[in-house]
Length: 226
Image (cartoon, rainbow, N blue to C red):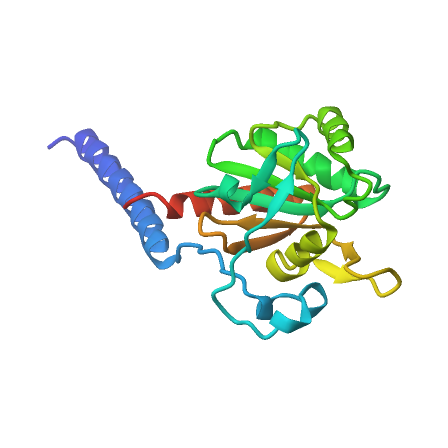
């Protein structure tokens, strides 16, 4: 064998050993890296200020309760509209001058990023006495809401209060106001197809929206048959 041919074969051998080593390390790391799974939230895992006192002890089997609301198109919306859907929920009001415009803008961002039919959005007004169907419709048009996948909802104030503090676990009591009044938070809530809470996100931060998008992808993959 000529010397030049020997060195040529030697270089190929070194190259293949190098590639194999890199691949082996990558496979080893993949095997050892656990697949990320989303938690299933219960009232006991959430800040007690945001949870109704009578369920703060609950450690498992928590699901979003049934509800009946009216959306921006004057259509009846219930929990059945979200059957077999992954969805993001929040609480807001149209006259909110502080965090709500940012939250709505970020929800629009999510709506535009997520075009799959099995992903929806739910926004509940905490001032239903102000946010009538007509008001919600104007707000939806102004903000660019996709009516086919995103319901802006108004309804009975007591029911909305109960949903916020007993189902979605995102609102504080307002001791300076009347019965069933609340202080909503900036939280977005990720709900799975079984109506369980799988994540909380700061609806005013775009980096949190990116984290939410990643978690939705993880959740979607969990429904794909192996």
